[in-house]
Structures are given as C-alpha cells and as structure tokens.
Amino acid sequence: MRVFGRGALLGLVLALAALAPGAAGAATQEAEGLWMREDGASKIQLAPCGGALCGVIVWLRNPNSKAHVGQKVFFDMTRADQNSWTGQAFNPDDGKTYSGKMVVSGKKLRTSGCVFGGLICKTMYWVRAN
Image (tube, rainbow, N blue to C red; front, side, top):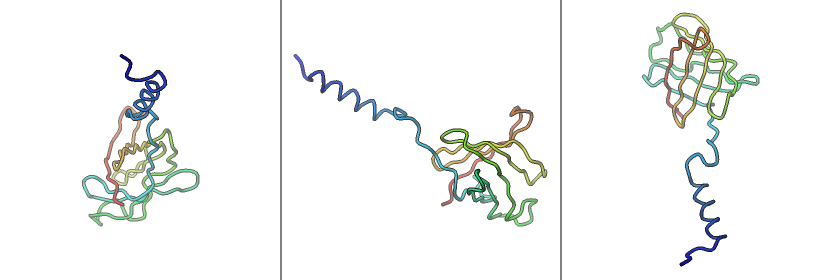
C-alpha cells in the first residue's frame, strides 16, 4: 500500500531536513552591544571601530580596581567565522596585551587572551546586558 507518491515523499524528506538543527548552517551571531562579566564585576560595550570591533569598559563594580571606565580592553577584533572574532585583548590587571578571541553563543560571550600561540589562555565569560 502506497501512502505517499514519490513527489510527496521527496517533499516531506526535504521539509524534515530543513527543520533539522544545523541543516541550513549556523546562524550568524553578532557581538556588538553591552556585555556584563558573569561575576558582575564589569560591563563592556563592543562596537565597530574602523573595520573591526573594539570593547571599552563602561562600568565597574569596584571603581578602585586597576581597570578604569573608558579603557579599551578589546581591539582589532575581526570576524573569524559566523560566531567568533580574533584580535587583541588588554588585561588591566597586569598591563599586558594578548592575542584575543571572542566567541558568541546566543546571549553568552566567551573571551580569551592567550600567549605562546594559544597554549596558555585566560578565559572570561560574559552575558548580554541589553
């Protein structure tokens, strides 16, 4: 007994494939906006600067920290793929600049500053604040 014709079966298969997770590729994620560090210690604003993205501290819970409002902590961040950027990350705690990476996943942002070609990295997590 035939329930579907050949054309109807093909249409059903294509419709189910389109609904499958990742079938059409991952959606492009945007990093621009206001982000709060997961521990609530600071907020950064990621915005275009030149042909890249930059991140500036816009709020600090502890105004006596080594960091200060207005300080650029991410710069020259260029898109590496649909949800990640690479560039430079500045760490106010030690005053050094590292190779940086940002990865956006929904309302979460993971930032890393690395040395030795990525062998040693410090990672921070952020949540979208806007």
